[in-house]
Length: 263
Image (cartoon, rainbow, N blue to C red; front, top):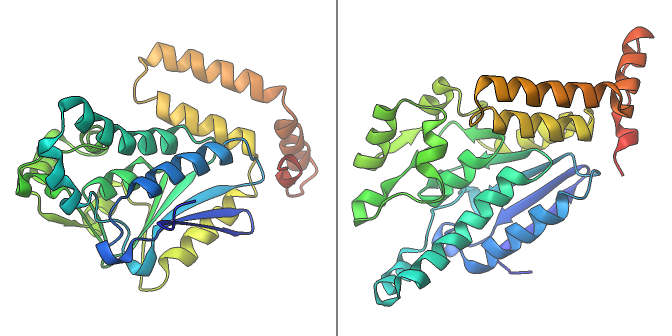
């Protein structure tokens, strides 16, 4: 495992920490490869209720390493795309991970760091944090799914403002758009993300997996296709052990125990 990725477990919550403090947690090959491996591993582990992504020393991620980007001009087109696809593999791994992924954003989420956060299922951010897509300021265009992910939450004009000017957007504005779930004070981001992860532990793991899949497909499916997808999911759930436990608990006026389905 790369020294740029710290893996820590706190009860049912798995923390993946970007540890590249000298470069404000810029992305590294080791971090990206380690992230993909850990997210794939946790997809087969129902004992993990949630994954929390964060950055060491109070800064989420500054995106790509600009010093490394200097070398890209000398590469072939295929080599450049290969290096970009390493980031895109991380984005795909977050989106396809079977359990919820929570971004704990302190400081800044810049460039590809913003994409990492926006790909997550839930976002907790510090009140002084910001998002920035400053690619344009160094003559580059967004990657990491930034335009797709932003277009799911904001009008085209606002996406253009972010991408064409490259200014910092305070989390308060993203919170107003509904893209950030909760804004908290200093030193509360990781504690809140941990608490949310523990809250997800009280829900059925298979139910959460299907909900994540449904909310993702809803962005792409025509309504009739999504209705069919939902019908199949609901009919499957009605015959599954998690619903048997949930319905029995409701009728007996007790709390359901979905932790028995985590292994």
